[in-house]
Image (cartoon, rainbow, N blue to C red; front, side):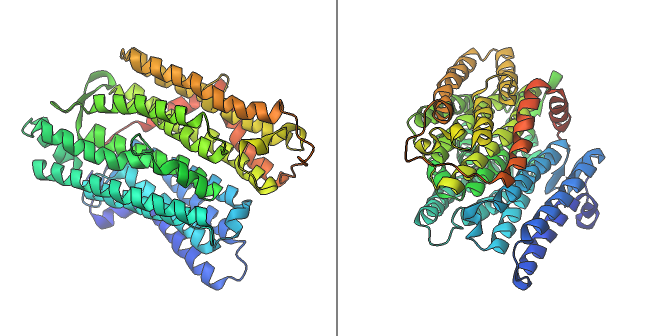
Length: 492
């Protein structure tokens, strides 16, 4: 199914609704005196877009807008994930003291615009479209990071993010120009066809892929393109940090899968994929995966700021996610999609607790969590333990099932060294996650540590995140089924 512009609009409702919501929130910001209703309009638009995305689940796959965008199960999955993330972040933002300081209309407008860019990252069928969508997400992320007024740490984080992003963007588009020069096309299907013919120079292709990986890797926080992450996560408002850690990273994984699989690999038998002859990009991702998870976990060991520690933890988890791409089959990709969903729940939950404690105490360091369970914040402390143990990969949490599926896919294809490195890194991560749990429950508060008056209005959101984190660790079949169904690529 190849559709022109007007014909494509009937399959473009999620994007149209979200774009319309961006305009409505912008206009309401100009005319409404009370800004408290703006998050309601933003959430309503995101919910309507989510309904439209789910309604497309039975639509036939095809190319939209003269083959610029792909409609398939994979692209729909990566519409649902960012929309769920932005809905939870909007809910979280309502209770954030940091977000109350910013211009509400601008904040929710940029947040929704960033989500719209994530849609296109997952569905791009053209190198130019992929680049523009990634830039849309990047530019809005810079604005969100520096949104706190008169806050030096926030401004510094945005500037660092911008500099690193500019370098990564330039490297990526230079690599894309190499691919265009060798294949004569920007469209993925045509690129695949030319590369399958074996006429392109393997050395030149490898250089091009490395340059393109720099752009993708910066978005997914793969080592050595990770340097911006700790400063940005620490300096940005906590809801923004949470959004970047799950939504932006998930979109980065989506654009990487779309490029390295349907664009430059051939589907084989039994769900296997065959990499382009002469280019060992899976081995490149194998090395990146092991180095990323190791660097992330080792750097997290000595962190005293919880947001900074979660930033290095996010780098480590990017390494785990790459494991699913290395094995070159649908089992690995399905495990990656499953892990993205559970990571969204447990990481958003961890940042929500960080925001709650910061609201109540003004502190983000681990010492600020001392005796938290005995200072009037027992429920957030218990939920934080659930999220941290799930991030570690301990049963019966969803994180355990996510890592189990990734390890199983890796071991099945005989990548034993990768599995051993991942297991060792999971053990290392237990130290710094358990250190926070120990501080909350086993370290008795000092005399000058007062009661922590957390807002009970945030408890429903804690339950919404903590409950499925445990539930998917006990009964994971529905989510596995959904991720397997979403793993359908329209290749023609």
